[in-house]
Amino acid sequence: MASSTTEIVHEFQPFIRVYKDGRIERLLGNDVVPASVDPDTGVQSKDVEIAPEIGVAARLFLPRNANPHHKLPLLVYFHGGGFLVESAFSPTYHNHLNALAAEANVVVVSVNYRLAPEHPLPAAYEDSWVAIQWVASHFKGDGQEPWLKDYVDPQHVFFGGDSAGGNIAHNMGMRVGSEKPEGINLVGLVLNHPFFWGEEPIGNEAAESNFPNKAFVDNLWRLVNPLTVGSDDPFLNPALNPELSSLVCTRVLVCVAEKDILKDRGWYYKELLDKRGWKGKVEVMEAKGEDHVFHLFNPTCENALALLKRVASFLNQDKA
Image 1 (cartoon, rainbow, N blue to C red):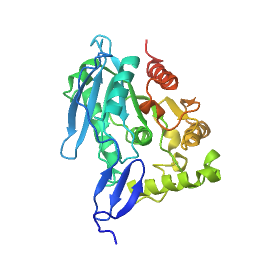
Image 2: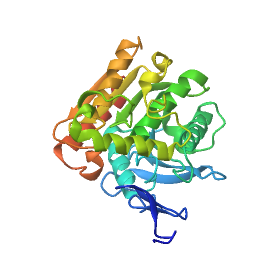
Image 3: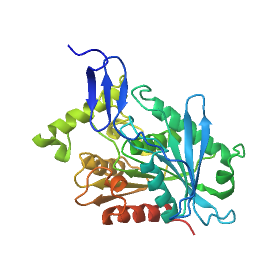
Image 4: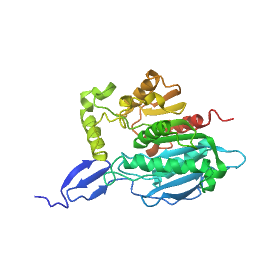
């Protein structure tokens, strides 16, 4: 019989292994890179502590030609990784947000939140809300971070993220609508391959070949949120949130990938917003032949560059 130090009780490839003795082995997303000046784009980055007592921090990105006399949009970004892996300081997200800050000419706050299963949901949501309140403090005259005070247009704030981070961005948008914090004028959401799900399969999820994928997602959600009601939790299934039409922003861009098991949920999100009487405009961009978060792993491919340009255009389309 295997000892408790080697016996695996949960294995979620490619994310983590959980051992019987409570040890967590993360299989990816462990590397970090320092903040720097990116030699290719000239984007500067730096790290800030937001709530060090609980480990909430952020990496900020400032474009090369930022000018305090021409304020820029702000993107508050939440990284993906199934709520289990990755960080705001990993090379994957550092490189992606360097490229996005340069292409879109926006300031970025990349939020570092606590990870499950050591810190199960709602920890990631609560940490993200702490970061949003910290951002808002600068537009009320209380914050001290000069990159936010000097370079950001507080009337052009966006939330964005990929996969689990897209889920967080949506739920933070809902919370802004319900709590209406002073200082945040949320214009739009950018949801890249957002992690939405539900008990009843939709679209291609119902195919027999996808049964293992459905079980994986169902079990993953229960691991990161052990007190959940299941895959119809309103945090995971926006269709079950009766307040969906009150989403406070006016524009949403959903990016999906043809081969991604989550693709149909992205399209369904658009359908829900349209049907529920939400007053904004929602767009969907589908990358043909691609799989989940392909743009992070192959950032120079044609589809990834097209996605980058589409997001940049979305963030700037109502700027003078």
